Amino acid sequence: MEYKSKFGFGCMRLPLTDKNDPTKIDQELFNEMVDLYMEKGFNYFDTSYAYHNGFSEVAMRKAIVERYPRDSFLISDKMPTWALTSEDDNDKFVNTMLERLGIDYFDVFFVHNINVPWLKLAEEHNTFEYVKNMKEKGMARKIGISFHDNAELLEKFLDKYAELIDIVQLELNYLDWEDPAIEAHKCYDLCVKHDLDVYVMEPLKGGVIVNQPEHIQNDFKEFDDSKSIVSFAMRFCASLENVKIVLSGMNKMEDLIDNINTFENFVPLSEEEKNFLLEEADKLREDLAVPCSECGYCLKACPLEIPIPEYFRLYNHHKVQPESNIYRLYYDKLGDEKVPASDCTQCETCIDYCTQKINIPEELQNLCQHFQEGFSPYGK
Image 1 (spheres, rainbow, N blue to C red):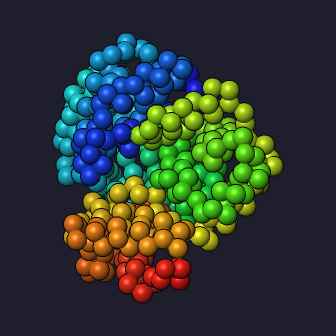
Image 2: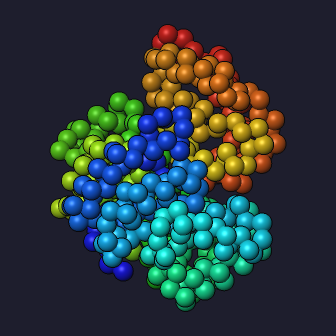
Image 3: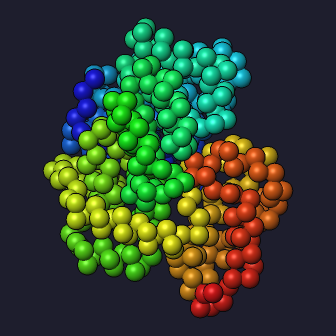
């Protein structure tokens, strides 16, 4: 399995023809992006059974598998751990993924989203033994986990399973590097200790790192206006020795081109640049209302299907731009079209599933209060 670069194409957030329907992928634009990505010498694509409600895999078959030789690209996919109800589901989901993609083996296969509740499900249904057998049979060239919890759980997991897996896919970015809730630095060090490859997801923390307040944007311009904020974030991750892939979820051609510019002639992060990013991370954490990465796993847990990430996105935007009332309009519209944030019953089911360890019910209360009381033309 040959990696041509550390730059991986994440297929969780593909371009859409209808932004309100994740199944309406803009196939023509995606094909064009794949063509440019491949033309520039990159070859790693990452998806999941759940991405775009299953249509990510279908779009990849059309854009990649049906248009390029199988030995010219690498594909990773993931077992939907939360959906497991029996051992038979392991086989059922894998066969569905292979069919959607139109392939007969995975280059990498992950057990998806290991946290406390979903680790329990995977163990109950012998999923780790199943993926081990996948590798032995040649259905997966490498196997691993995508991990969404703290260092304590990762340490316990690796003490038990490190010999079985090849890769840990971690949420890793300069904002989370020293964050006590995410513990990205500690998690990375545990992978190094066990001599495991690290694949990076959320290097931009779901866009939080990109959508920064003006004073932080100005800091970047003063520090080095020749590089984009995104390029700094990607280089932070790719400069780590055990990191083999840094995924970027791109839905615009300009995002792809920016990443290509970063990785075509890759320059490792200097110590000065690293220190600057960690200083800016401290400032950014102070400005954020909620450190939500918009992964959407809380939606699978919420019995009312409250669109939690959408509310938190508006909340963060308004905290960054308090002088704008436009976010109030979007907040009201969202509550008219979907379940209002105020309908939260404080059942706390969502908390165990949050990759950022956010107290979601508490933050929804804060959000409601903010949008009801925290408005004036000049912010409050």
